[in-house]
Image 1 (spheres, one colour):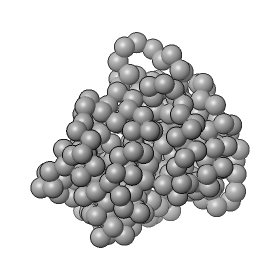
Image 2 (image 1 turned 135 degrees about the vertical axis):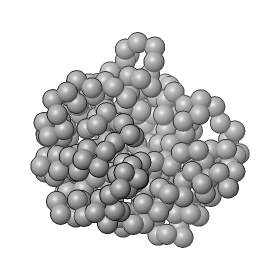
Image 3 (image 1 turned 60 degrees about the vertical axis):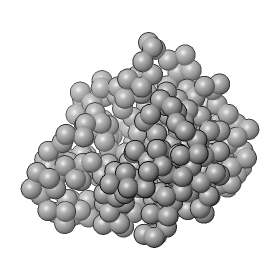
Length: 281
């Protein structure tokens, strides 16, 4: 792993509180400190967490100062939702605050997902086109993530939507849980067809191909494995990213209730150690 890529290793630290959006300012500061203690140089910040802390009476400047004091950058802010219907007023209302948080922290990218089980492709392309314009006006990249249980279930469907939306600042988040568990399994052909600069962020975690139970979304939010503990073929996946010239932000995102019980400091430490091992750091 090159030093340049090592510098792009950050932590999606929302899993340290189980992905809860109803967090206190004290919880936000705790996961910020745990992230820094684990040796990460930055975070992928849930805008919900910043807004929850501010809503509880902490100033925006203070929440940002918690990150600054520990030397943590915020290159990615999550998550843009509710845009796939294509209605511009709804998008402004639902996604505008996330863009504002990203601008406040000086982020380089804003990430989004589709939560609906089905989408109208043309409406979603219109919505993503709107997100791209909102990002471009602020100097931000916009990257979307496919979710296997959603109306955007595969890398192929996500890339098709990005192409339809247009905009040089619009790209993808590639989450390795979703990479393995997407319908049909890993799609190396599509990944190889994507220009490397359109892979804006890689979220690292692990799973098994078969999975467990019938509720894939619940499994994804409660029992992801540490990178290297599942069946993701890291050599092949990382090798393809190298082939296409991708230089993404690397952001482990391990939702795991068992790990969370060990506390945020230990959980962040274990995520960091596992991630650095699969990346060869």
